[in-house]
Image 1 (cartoon, rainbow, N blue to C red):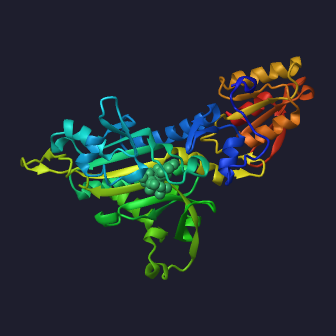
Image 2 (image 1 turned 60 degrees about the vertical axis):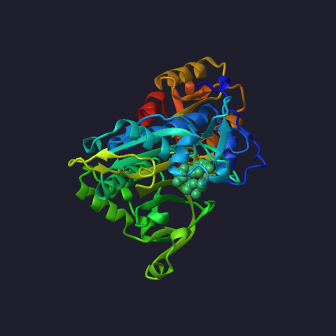
Image 3 (image 1 turned 180 degrees about the vertical axis):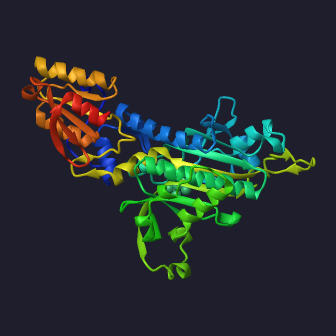
Length: 434
Ligand code: ATP
Ligand code: MG
């Protein structure tokens, strides 16, 4: 992408409406713009980040055997009446009516819709277990939208739903999601601690929230210091046999970690190295038995002809919230520091003298080497402005091309995360990045 022809409107000044670093930086780096309270347009660079995160989520869901589908954002109120949630859901639900007066809603979640799709098509025990997910926009009319995309009203979520024949099967599906989530967060370059969460009337211990520690987080959390040192990926298993999954699950959940909702003072008192802090909830997995399948009449025929009501779980990742949460975890005074895995562009090529034949040629060569995936700063602007914007936007690598070096095919390569700069040939710089 050529910056001179891109809608990446960076801002020098801090926008007054932004209270936390990620919100400020998302606006300043030109990733998003608010179009209505809690509703955002994702501009080209922001959209790339969002898609990169979604793709990692997708790959890790598929890796544990889940199927992707796409359900609509608009749902029928009738479905929600069947589960009994239509009236109970309250003011967070955006309710609509079509021209015929039929009641609709903008989906805040999809348990009912998927239970309905399964009810129409799945008839036998032989067809289960299955886990399906989609990555789709949700709407919740939050009382206080704030912190930019962290608590929006329209937001992108990965929501998955498992269907098993019995509790034991549901436990395996749940643990597969735990594994997938640990892999997702590792690839995103953040540590998200699985914390015991509320199970409501279902009871049991199959509800975890995934929390990224950050002083600006909305959740109060209590955890064992062991989590600070823990390398979750070391525990990740490659073969998902029930026994492997059980061992993995035990390993990642063995130390105390809970949000204030489920905090247990008696157990807490036994923790030798206590840590208290704030955190951002970026995911939530939840087993809820037959809470939706039973009222909606979802059944499959068992081996002996009996009717089995499938056990369900649901598994959410806040894809758009993660953009903010990642920035909270990865930034400095100058701007964003993107992990390579989600950066909108792998590198920026900074042309210090647009119009200089040598600079232009070397920049074009570098740009071509990335197959158009890099960002080329070809604006006729001062070097200082370009450096500041490159740091602000947080590209993992900066390839700086000036007239003196260009004459000899040399560039300066800067690593955003460390600030380290080296002078080398373009070929060597490309070899380092690609
Ligand atoms: P919260 O307690 O933050 O309101 P929730 O419990 O309502 O979250 P879930 O229904 O479990 O959230 O949704 C799954 C994930 O979707 C959450 O873990 C979070 O990352 C994300 N999410 C929920 N509400 C919002 C929102 N208003 N804006 C952005 N992301 C959200
Ligand atoms: Mg909520």
